[in-house]
Amino acid sequence: MPDYIMHNPDGTVKAVGPVADRFALTGFNVNGLRTLDTLRKEEWISFDNAVIKIAEERLRGVADLINAGLTVSLPNGLGTTVYQWETQGDFTPANVNMDAVTPGEADRITFNLNSLPLPIIHKDFYLTRRNLEASRMRGEALDTSGAEAAARTVSEQVENILFNGYSMTFGGGSLYGYRTAPTRNTVTLTSNWDASAKTGEQILADVLSMISAAHQDFMFGPYVLYVPGLYWTVLQEDFKTNSDRTILERLKAVDGITDVRPADALPNNNVILVQLSSDVVKEIIGMQPTVVQWESHGGMRINFKVMAIMVPRIAADHNGRSGIVHLAA
Image (cartoon, rainbow, N blue to C red):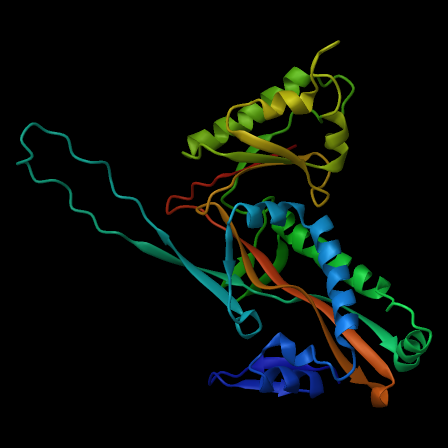
């Protein structure tokens, strides 16, 4: 039977299995499965370095949020299943008159409570006790290929959720991404950017239409423009025939756009414009990609899991205005 942890209706936690028990006994501290009982210090360092390297390569959109300071770090991500935040409503317009004697319209701030599930994104791999001891006897470095492969799948899923969301509802909330948030602005893509007849001027016109949609929602930047890999190649072409700059350079020159970035997680013919501000998006981080370990099969099999708790909080104001614009057919 697999290990599992569940929350009882009375608020207590039920842990079943040796791994779940170790989590529960340490107050859901991930270091409860990162001891020196099996792996040596330098072996843990090898695994951790491999995971960090892969995460840095794959987490492009998430890295933009981290670098912009648009994150919320949870002190106990394993013990938190739902993240909640409030959306504040706007006041009506101010009164205008000559003497301020005429009674004005009295307002009060209203709030909406929003919820976001915090799933664990994880991938398992294992070594046998014999493999581990053989590598130690030969003085060879620990094989980190399993950790790298697991970290790659976890990081790709974290990035995929940011752009595409995930079909999950828990605790009254759902996991939305840039491309699936119901409050996002949408602009119709009339012809694909890789079509033979598509010009640099037409691509620029598409982007300006996206910015116009953001402006209509009172979102004025700064923006990052994300394009799928197929379009990234197109953007390397000349903006005009015999032009002295590429389409990419022309788009970066648009006022308000701070960068144009390729996003492997985006499907073809989908482009995303995002205002990088706290009222639009934050990355909720309960756990960065981390390796944990436990034994099974009488200690002959050493199991590992790369796990992360990282999901986007896609927000809109009380009136549903959003700083995300989605260009698609």
